Amino acid sequence: MSGIPFGTTDWSSVEPTVHPGEEGHATWRTRQFNDIRVRLVEYSPGYLADHWCSKGHILFVLDGELVTELKDGRVFTLTAGQSYQVADQEEPHRSISAKGAKLFIVD
Image 1 (tube, rainbow, N blue to C red):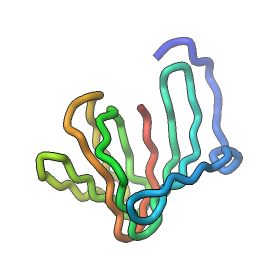
Image 2 (image 1 turned 135 degrees about the vertical axis):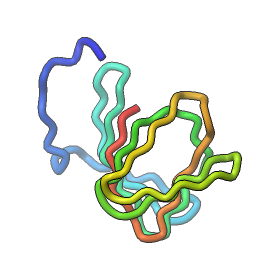
Image 3 (image 1 turned 135 degrees about the horizontal axis):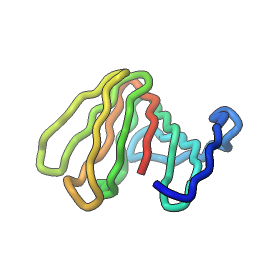
């Protein structure tokens, strides 16, 4: 990372955007720092992503439970305090959250 001066974010003041899934929805609060996107994301209970994602992320579960399904059939369940990381154009993945989840994502 370069060219990003020190700063703080009050996430409650970042305007939310709603993204419908195949089921449920995701609410994003997004900040962009040059080519780095930082998001606070909340999945509604019953959320199922409407696409396979090939974007790289570092994702940290703040609350709830996230199931990440890889296109090759592997499934990973993460709860608060757990994270995953994947590079751009690596294993396509999608998110599922039966109970809802709150995530912090950098990509």
